[in-house]
Image (cartoon, helix red, strand yellow):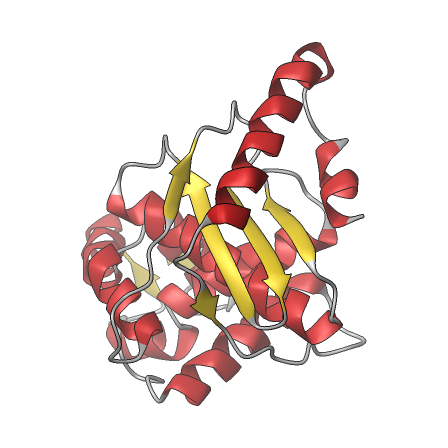
Length: 217
């Protein structure tokens, strides 16, 4: 059902091709022997999707014991998510613009993750991976097996996983400690983006959405 819901946001003119890409991705994920173990987290009810994402990110950081730790790079993110064990692999799949990432859960709490192979830059890879992690956490708490798509659509699920990724990679409380004033320059945004291993757009959105600045000059 989740796949069907997101899939109908696809490009109708390329529906057949995108469906083939999706089916191919599902087969590769189902056959992958590099699964992740992710404990599900409860989703806060009665609040906006982005607020749910923020809370999930905070909860996961607390669960992992890394509340005050920036990752800085994709490799560091993987190592932290692996919690000292061998970092699980993330497949790279062709998506034909249908998805940014895929999450396949064949059994409870064991998932295989994939990201769009076009996301070669570390920042984009980190953001897509975190969005997939959010889907895995929520999927586990809802007890629904199957495949979840991370897409560019504006559904409640996608808003939630985008907010999760932004907050998990660049927590508002850490940004608050790093900004010198309520009015900052773009150079500060660029420095923060490099420190946290995200795009400047993610930093800008975090600063604005959490009311950390009055203006960026």
